[in-house]
Length: 169
Image 1 (cartoon, one colour):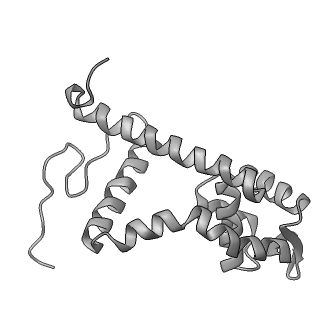
Image 2: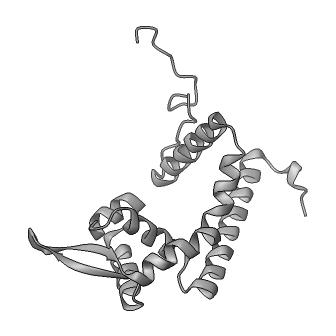
């Protein structure tokens, strides 16, 4: 086995992302056992609780998933009594989503299981470091969503060269 420090930096970073993905999936399975919802279902319920009356299409755009994915998750959560769909009074082809009491109760109970570790870490991290991390992860998402086109690191042009900063601004 190759020691991690002997791996190229790219592979070290990818290994860390896999470790994060594994930890998130493990926490999600635990939430399913304890609370009856996965972490992604919990996140969707949290968004609906914060934006009552949002549409599945709005959720799909916000969560960066397909409308079909949101539809499947919403159907499951509706069947399990966490939320309800209601016809939009202005457009009967559209639906609006609302938490049911079971979903609202879960909102309070699940916060410790899903958000507390992240909140604790963020509270202990300087805002500038959080901003840099968001930029890096955002750039990584763009790179992964645009196959065949290497993404530039934050602060660099598309070829990896430093971006020129305009002094006119």
